[in-house]
Length: 288
Image (cartoon, rainbow, N blue to C red; front, side, top):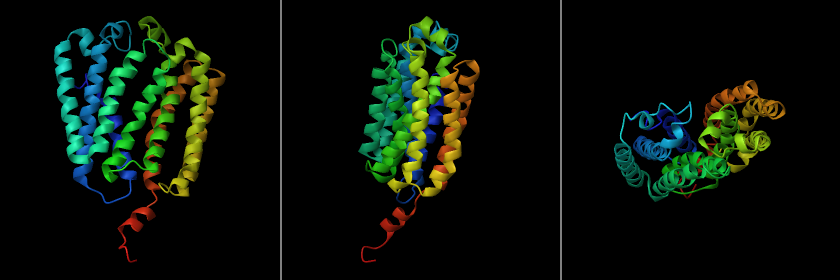
């Protein structure tokens, strides 16, 4: 079940959901955070199980995925679908009961988007990467709505940062996987349009920098966040530019590894720079 659920990916999804909860204004509830985390994890496990079920013929052709449990026959396709159905229903129900309709709706929508749009789209159009980036951007928004019950501009800021981060991360990863993707028939930017792959990675690295510099205007973080993230984002832009100028195994790996460090550091700096004045204002009596 651990392999079928892609637990490393699921853990990242849960962490970004928790970050969204931590950044939202309002009082902290350990129960709500726990239910949001469990519900998100189960929904992610369901999506990953369906993804592997749909891609059995293609995973078998790729070195990176040829040892997955369904390809090797360690689990039956029916067993995988049964697990996905139970995890999906319990996950969305947990989100609804513990976090409200907004969070449950976003979780259900993300499950459908990942399994019914992103996964099949990988076979016929490079736009799958943009769809996949939307999937990655939704979890922090879910964390925000779990805390507030509403979809505020602050939630969209978090989603926008996660959306842009996907491109330098995935485009760098996919660069060295081009033979695998080509053999399996996946329509990835790195395979069908390598120049676009490099440009998009650089473009969104610059986009993350701009978002972080402008983020204090949203009242989600203070100007400290803009200042402390500037060196980190500048290095991301530098590595993306190196990848753009001379895309090879070295520059792509360097950018990919940096992206793995970049996101958790960005989240930590965001939490440390959270603008708490809004929370304080909302907690004051109306006659103050």
